[in-house]
Amino acid sequence: MKNRVAGIILFLININFCVSQNIRGTAFYISKSSSKIFKNEALNDPNMDPVMKKFIEAKMDMMLNKTYILHFDNFNSLYKEDIKVEINNNDIDGSWSPYGIEVAYFKNIKTKSYIIQEDLMGKELFVKDSLTNFDWKLESETKQIGSFLCHKATAKIIKRTEVNATSSRQTNFLTNDEKNDEYFVTAWYTEEIPINSGPTSFWGLPGLILELNNKTTSILCSKIILNSKETKKINIPKNAKIMSRNDFDILVKMKNKELENIDFTK
Image (cartoon, rainbow, N blue to C red; front, side, top):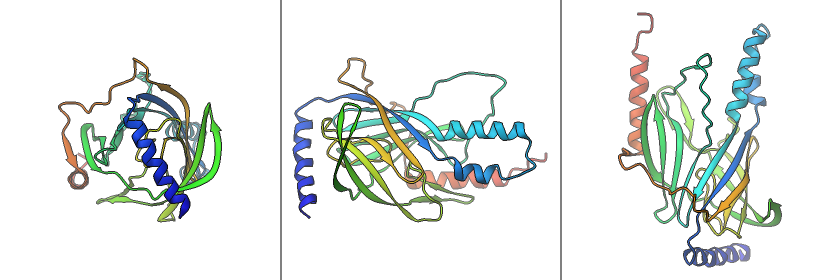
């Protein structure tokens, strides 16, 4: 209890400190997920062509190991994949998803809300919802990440899924064990950057989150740039069509039904 009260007091102090400063910055993260489970499921056919097997393994490595950028200021943040576009006409698979692909993640700590930029079958949409209130447990353990002293915090995450006609899509960023409905996440945050934010949906600690871990995924900050003149302004596009999570789920179900009724044999 004392640990929790001390954490709340420290959090309030950091908020006041943060408000008194105009903090802006950019953090770069490396996300790595274990491919063991996925490869066991996708590559378990002993008769699979070796060339195709190698191709699938390469695609999996690309999907499970990515880099992300977090632009942040006192109360806002934008988290998105650092995509380096390399056009190769011989390697275009035309992939798209009928369930939506998260392109960018905007957080507003003041309003406790987020907006996810989704790509739904090639259509750009912006989905708004409330931030999850994580019940963080502040631990006494510390470690160094780069030049920053970081403190440990843990939280139990309840797996949230969006159920539609043909699939269940997990909304939390970190991959979860499919057999469990809940799991624990470990965060390492630094009070030296008193920003109440972190990668994707995670927030609520007395400093910027530099590392996140669960059983299958780790996200580690590799570089931070503070108060640079070149720091990106966090703005949602003026012409963005913003919709609620419920309306988006209804739209996804409708698109799935349309796909089910298409006769691909014609």
